[in-house]
Image 1: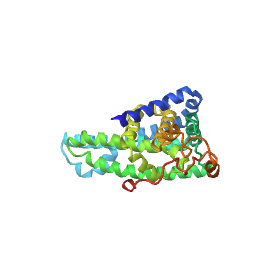
Image 2: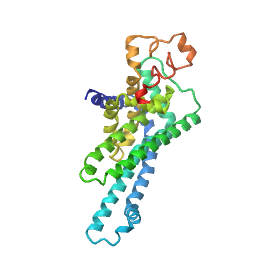
Image 3: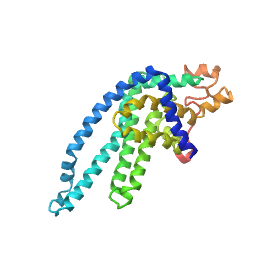
Image 4: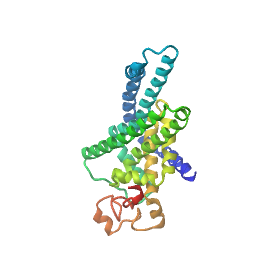
Amino acid sequence: MRDLAGGFGYLLAGQRWVLRHGRWLGFGLLPGLVSLVLYAGALIGLGYGADDLTAWITPFADDWSSPWLGLFRGFLTALVFCFGLFLAVITFTAVTLLIGQPFYESLSEQVDRSEGGTVPESGLPLLRELWISARDSVKVLVRVLLYGILLFALGFVPVIGQTVVPAIGFCVSGFFLAEELTAVALQRREVELADRLALLRTRRMLVLGFGVPLVLAFLVPLVAVFLMPGAVAGATLMVRDLTGEDESRTAGTDSGTGTSSGTDAGTGAGAPAGGTTGGFGPPPPAYS
């Protein structure tokens, strides 16, 4: 329970950070607005076409008598729209981060800078960073689709499909939403996708405490646009906890995010001493 509360605390801390630094909130609204328009159009189209889609995939039910035909296809239509909404929540963050990549990376760096210590920088050209972000987002989307298909099938199970499955769906959405947001800070620390997922699994409750409330908030129109900058800031703060950078700085060790040493100079500007991942080494075998 402490980690659940801690994850939610990082979400609130991120929102407070951007409110104290108003210009970052202002600049962050544009990418979210562009994404919102795109997704609103897609969901409206799905809403109008979902009933035709369910009729097309269930031709065997054409001869069913009323009210069973309407109930069956109405239930399927609702599931199709919910599945589309599920994908929209997951991919919205990835698309918004791609659109606003330069801004969100600068915001994440500023959060690190405000917390003290060194500020990890990827040092990669913008196009290379965009390619890596897009590639990793596709890999995450594949995982989400696999979970989504499984949960969609389980949705037909009586009682469980209407109670347990939606709860699991929110947890899955929250986990991967948190992964997309923490990727901004972790990519600057040169942590690859597989290692990022392993790191997040070590503190599942912390990650869910951050991601699930954000998923629920993103279901409200326009809310996602205004929360995105703060979500990136909060994710950066959470990354500092996950990688142990705050503990290292508090302890005053040279290998964390404390004062620079000769090793710091050798690793390049902004890179944390002792490695390129800010103190996060290879994942434990159980999570790889």
